[in-house]
Length: 245
Image 1 (spheres, one colour):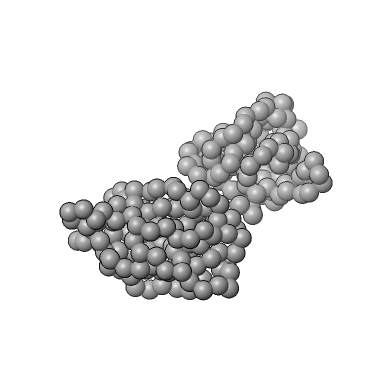
Image 2 (cartoon, helix red, strand yellow):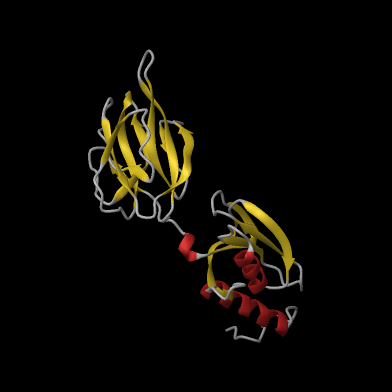
């Protein structure tokens, strides 16, 4: 049985095994760092053996804590890819602004501020519209280009205000998102104000691909685009960032 500080393998030095153990513990419990203004940030291991997110900076660091500090001080950074290497001062640290598009890389582990993790969307059959959820994606009926078969929703805190209704090809008013909708077009859709509002511009168009369109993380649907010339069909959704996500 292996114990900390001892290696049953004569070719692995004891100090190397001890460093490995310390790194493993840090990865399991995460790391707390203090920012320039004294505000703390906590980063936890999110995806071992993968590199994730859109990289905004890359430096060489001596430790996990150094990489975490670099992320905390970088504008917009929510997480980082850290190279798991025992070579002193030779660990690559890649700071990121999101955690999308992970790729397999056994030499790296991705750490993230847990406050930035967005719960995965919930898939519902069209016609079942739960309250307290924003529309984040749609799936078309394979037999009908103007009919929805599935919807994707994500929990959100709404402001105590009245719904405002829009039709297809019409944007939700500022700081509101679509919450439900009829399965078959043409129709009207209720938009509801979200606590904290939305971040303009709300103009990210996601075209239907493979019968489906999904907003990126932290975004919700504010408009459904429908082709009205000739044969009607849903062509795209328009997404807007929700501030509280």
